Image (cartoon, rainbow, N blue to C red; front, side, top):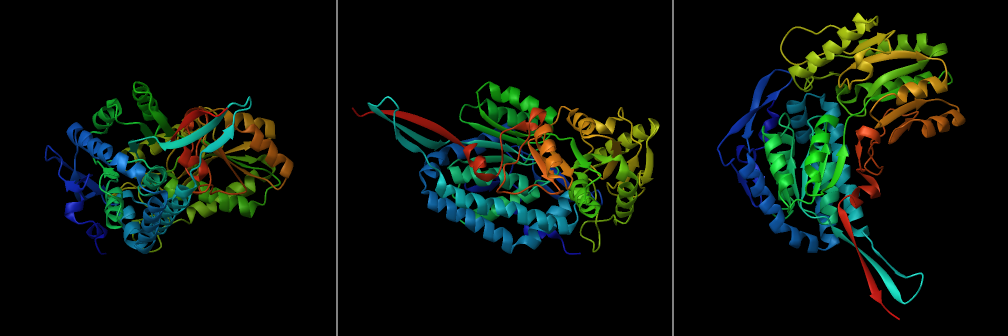
Length: 486
């Protein structure tokens, strides 16, 4: 097996600040491991507050010039990034698998998905518009002028190390903002490679800065406390999101928050079960279940519960587990040992409360952070996994008897990111669309993520939207001018 880290030269495993790749000011580094083996695959720079503020210096210096860059030029650079990612898809995908653990086929899909954000926002860059109109009472004109927010701080998660950064960087650059990205410590290599690719296609110095660190709290806090930072976008847990919102409040920063989820997937008795099974497998097992939009609770209407459960369990049992770079692997390693322990504890809690394990449910021996695809039935309402975000390949199945019952259960959570409904009855589908408290809903689909669609949640699943036309608006302020014209 060739070493995918070879695509990232040692000098590019350092901090990307301004026009330079530099060591951390302290000289500190930290190890990145392959979650399938537990072995170290690279050492990267471990930034501290000094380095974070140096990145903000670079982003601030570049801000005026980048904002003044013609939209067409910004568009061309984003298009060039899209093409470079597409051309280098295989090497980027192999690096994602190595540091994150997902199977190579899924890593390839992530590269395609992440690249599409650059293509989409390349097109949006030239369509930022204001308006000019006569005031209703006459006597003056109303002019609205969109302007870049300014330097942006991005905190990205480990589960989609390319796509989550692309979803933030692309609209920011399209709008004319400069950026500082702090990737997750578990998966910094992919973001460093993206920064290198963007450097190669000609994105100016200081526009894309990347600060890798194990000291996220202190570095990000310092960035948010500096008045030059004007925007924060975070993808991660609701718990951390609350902390960052409190910190962002001091300087009244623009914020986008894509936080936790507890998605209900609802299978109605009138659903096409083949479609529902396909959708449930995608919604549950994409990214090994390590996704904020993963189906966390599967509700099946009683008349089809037995058939759906048996067929779903059979498909889950057939999935192969192993290193994501090996041929034929369907389920790779979880990100770390803590994730495995958390999931194992949730399964044990459900079993203690009366749930039955149909497939999986036992933590394997050996190296790496693996957990088998697991299906549980007869899961009681008080099981912790029905309120917690499982973030792994575990599917609890619960029966329901009426739409009113399942809507109430689906909404009985602090989260409101996404839901899934499978029915061939349009009227039922519309009732679910209107009744479920979610920012997104998949109807007869288990995959809803699309760069052209607004991604985001309600309640404690977040603030704002990413992707689509709405995504670029998160990076624009609006100046209104009243122009006297009798």
